[in-house]
Length: 430
Image (cartoon, one colour):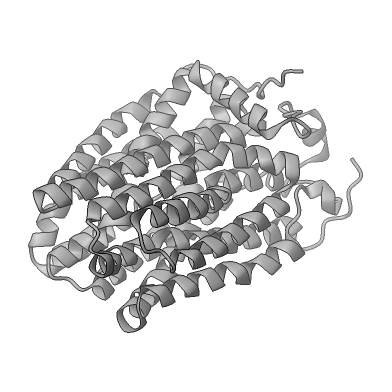
């Protein structure tokens, strides 16, 4: 492969920067329901269970789009797919301001925004890292994953203030403008592969690239066909079920429960939305460090042991949350610190274990399906917790059950990759 001499700043870092900004805005949009539930509940008189259905559809589509998005990156290109996603997000969030019936919210926030967000899910991070970085993959993936925490940190307090002073529609318009602001950067700077710039992946040796196995060979294949082939491959793999099962629990205990219902739970206990959003922002600050550190550790430590610690500590923190909500103010702050360091630290080691099981060339599609299970768990937890609150009056059972299943996940992850890794790429049928 002909390559240009590498400049001091490898273009991979520009790609990582644009990807980070895109994921940051997507994370801000995904965190918005936390500050919208209560004002929408008050304006329309809908129950929390009803609103949670729309959020669950959003979370579900966000996950199910992942494996197909990974195939779209190969078929149509990363830049084009990201541009379409940002446009869908901006249009969908703006259209949400015109809702007047529950099915409007399910269709627009659940369907349109969910699909747009799913096209920039964690499969985007995995694809960018596997294509553009040969070394420091765990560290870069940790930073990209931390964009979710940074988006939460930047947008939630601002959105909570907008909702408080100007209403929830102004907050929706603001987050839509953020998506449109990133769109020109994607169009100008994003590239599909290092070869488009005449470069090797960052840190790569030409001989390693030329002899490394795992070319997917499915660039010109139907993306739906490629995604289904990945699912078929995963369904017969024990490691896939362990990775998907543990990530199902991860989604149920993060996006579905805490990301969606912590602010309403705080309001139930007399804590203002602005204060509760500040707690989530604090968790975002800590998760920014925790996830970045997790990426660094995944380059150096056994990922199974890292995941065991992460799920175990998360389970203990969730078991203590009901008591923190009803106890002294410092208890909730302690929960925010303890839980925040662990929020999405599971992503870098999970991606690494996926690559070890299925090969680096297949990591986009395979992790896309594993992430889909994450969002199925998130969707079910969002609906379940909303129903528990509606019919039982509080969230205690939802929080305690989530803590218990996290402890279960801590045991499951120790069995991942106990057999030699299968590093063959997804077979492509004629």
